[in-house]
Length: 309
Image 1 (cartoon, helix red, strand yellow):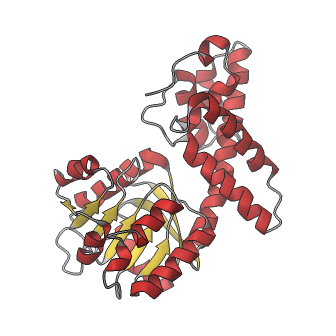
Image 2 (spheres, one colour):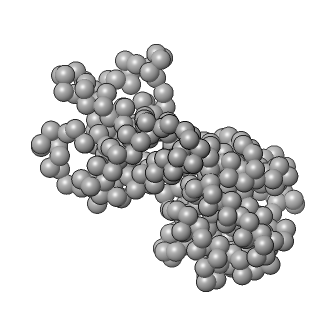
């Protein structure tokens, strides 16, 4: 982003809506890069924390859109995206020609296409669906992978700003293509969590040091970022802050199954992972760390441990 930095005359005013586990560190990186950023969050406290870092706090989503030319959003689900776009004091209430929304949320591809078209008709605002992968660690370190759907010119316009928050930004096709790519990502991640939990439990039950699996398997065919990151957290019971909520992973897996049905695609592994996450949701709660899938096959003592607060 060499041409658009701390004092770049060509820099656009930016907005960020949704300051949760991912949104807050991503917005903070924009501020650290010297950009002017208007923020809004449903709970005011999270926005106030960013104000101390230089963000300008807006009262409503429409106020962010009124002041910014590129608006990033990162919220829980399609219903939350819908509310930000079309709810009271939403993005659709301001003139939108020349403005762009870059939605980092993970939602159904059909929902992304529908919201994008309706917003374009409402006020002329453009839309890029750009879900992310890399978790909170990637958001904090700026190493996220972003997969995008939208117009090529729009993609290039926002690229310098996205790369202030991410290592990779790949244009996958028209609107909805980013969301479909994220579903492919979640097939791999969701199944990997389930498989790594199974392997780690086997090691523990067989009497070997499960904590040494990442070291022992490093460089082999089983090595991966999930192996190195997830297994130590499973073994040590590190679930705060969560890498991702069970409810979020289950939402994505259920969307995969829905899209697979529409495209006549067999997804037996993702379907099984969804059922396992449904079981762990019942035992640990929707807001628990997704890596608590490891506790599905826990001993009675482990299973009785309190849920994370």
